[in-house]
Image 1 (cartoon, rainbow, N blue to C red):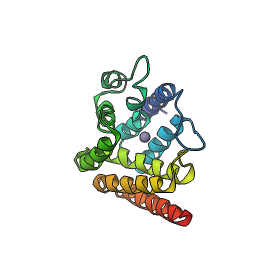
Image 2 (tube, rainbow, N blue to C red; image 1 turned 135 degrees about the horizontal axis):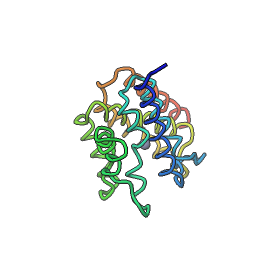
Image 3 (cartoon, rainbow, N blue to C red; image 1 turned 90 degrees about the vertical axis):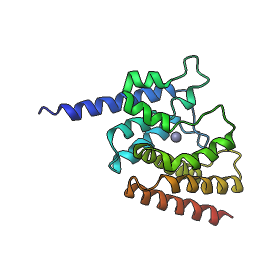
Image 4 (cartoon, helix red, strand yellow; image 1 turned 45 degrees about the horizontal axis):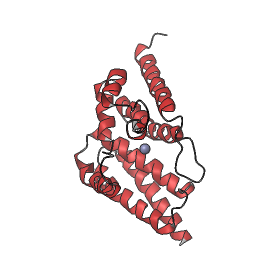
Length: 191
Ligand code: ZN
């Protein structure tokens, strides 16, 4: 059977997944289980694919932390590199989801809240799926050294960012709300 569009789509997705696996080869999640970092980007991409996000957003999800997390590498991943390998649309969504690491952490967190409503629909979906994955991780495998108060603060911040990301994909909005409620309930049960 000749289904060129699907073949191309799968090939592009797998190319992005392989690219991300290489970039994140030495990276681990902050959680107590120290999961390989690539688990996170695969989860974000899966959430988007299962909720009808456009293909560019799913590919961008696989790549969404490659710029931010390769800044100390001998050859950091750049926006231009992503344009050359995956096209302008994908690279631009990744750029929208990338923090400026030259700024202090608290400034970056405040800017995520401020900029959320101005993002493209694809970037809103990507960032919402990213927060869903992070909230699941906070509940299931909290970062070493994060006490209860710090986790409560993180969940509250994620909720404030998410408020500005909603409206692009109602099914994803509902999944965020369910995940947020679950995280709040788990933290309350521990208090
Ligand atoms: Zn992420």
